[in-house]
Image 1 (tube, rainbow, N blue to C red):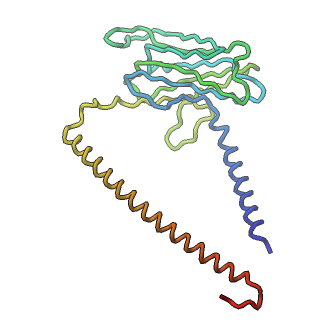
Image 2: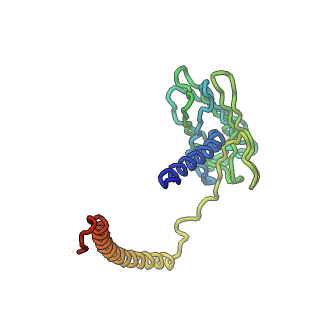
Image 3: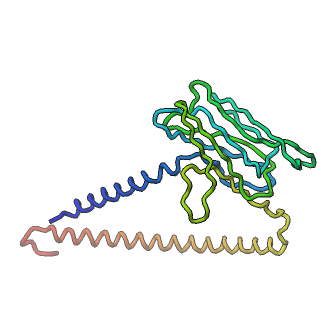
Length: 251
């Protein structure tokens, strides 16, 4: 006869093995260079971080090259200092010029390159974030695709340059980081006074409902506690009866 405890233990071990297998398959697919957050607003300035995990077991990441898309030119790019890393921002000519705060700008950022000094490399089992502020973000496209090269100390280069997959298709082996660009939100003053009054009324109703709900929950909680204590007492009495010596009359 299989004891229930052994059956539960076997089921737990099987579930654990299944989870390990699933997670083991998922980890390699997620360990690529990403941009965070994944969304920004067209026409505005955005702060993003390029998150770079080290995938090698023996080599360290020594250089990162982020290529900005030519079809989504950005006039201004600034970087956050990363201790032990130097950074260079390369530019390119654009025609027609970009319109930035009423001025014509004829250059856009083309590539950002970070290079580690001795001892600052991203070592196995580690990751590093490289922060960038840029803008104005283009309004002519709904996304920016950054093609990235990640160089290791052993000379190997991971090329994160694959275009996004079509809807429903599998993710490419070396996907490029993608920043989604959303249209600018409507002006805050666009809401009508009637809508504001309605919102206040809804808020008051919600407060009343919350108070009523709290009172009901408290009542149910007390009732549940009383019922639980009663059940505990009955259970104790039943247990005492089952434990009485043989031949002892019941109370």
